[in-house]
Image (tube, rainbow, N blue to C red; front, top):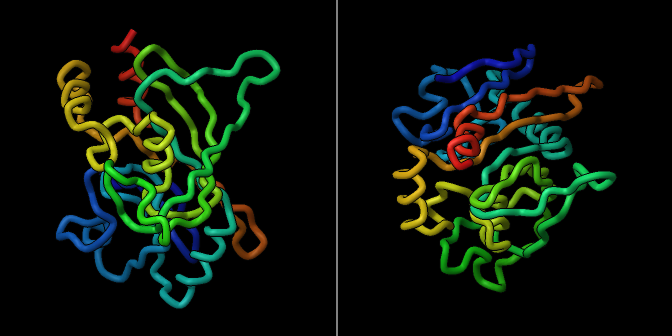
Length: 217
């Protein structure tokens, strides 16, 4: 179900369910919203969360620039245990900086061809972890295609349910044991400046992410 979270005179921010493309499909976000809407940003079909759309095509590029200059945060469940900071270091950001291409790649070579690789930076911090999974929030500093999915895979901690970069047999096992049938990546928060105002919008983390931890105890 598509939910409107913020309405501005120049744009609207909605939350997109996983499994729905932003465009180019009969049941895409744009098709479901109706005529006259234009995408300001996109997220992967398998990713849920925040998408900015507008009915003012003349402002589309300017809103895109504002969004690029702002902040984008994601929530993800990654495979395996990642150390959780405690004490004064609690909440500390860490960084992945593997150079990657700006194309959709695959699990055999997530970075892409050497000549296509570009500087790519993702900040992340661990919110919760156990022996099997780690819940992280990510702040992308560059905007490469599949950036979080590639970076986490290169770090040896692929996004749970990512059939493109993860281990298919492992994904099938998780689906069977935990009844979890999606990619665990969610566009969680956007913050940017528009006409002098700070625009901040948050889409609650999917309950299925937290239930995955509860069932894995």
